[in-house]
Image 1 (cartoon, helix red, strand yellow):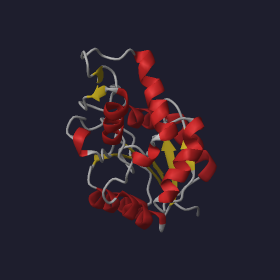
Image 2: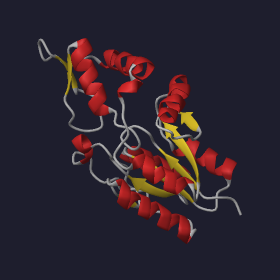
Image 3: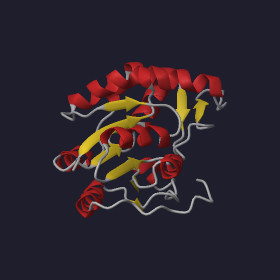
Image 4: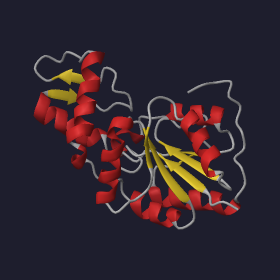
Length: 216
């Protein structure tokens, strides 16, 4: 029988992102990032006048951060210790929406913290890449971890047998993001999350499929 598989996001699950990003755009670009939720829409404003940045200005800042400033990121409390325990029981793949162009840098970033796992830099909904991973690994059981509710809906549609854990490891935004409707659990503490994941691996049964009438 093949090993279990855990597919995890990185930003706000394994590594802090919005706080280091906010500090960087403030110091280097004169831009304030008001952390109200996980969306960047309308959250970036010029310090001098308070004018929101245009959508066309946001991605270049994110791209520059991931190209040059990933060293500012630091691990979520307990995340990498939990991953070490989980890795003894399962294969781990990091599925991150930084895009293919930043995939190698993400591998290097995590390796600096002694975390070594395959990394996939994707774009858009994560349901399809999760389904492809399930087809590739053929795991005995699989768990998906992400901070964004929409990805849980996407995975529920494309790979409904995968257990889905909604985890927001950044305290600055955790209380601003409602639990994902299509996740099986919402846990923001990595000690508790580790125990929940290990329990799913030990049970070794497919996840129950939720109704998908409502989308996040």
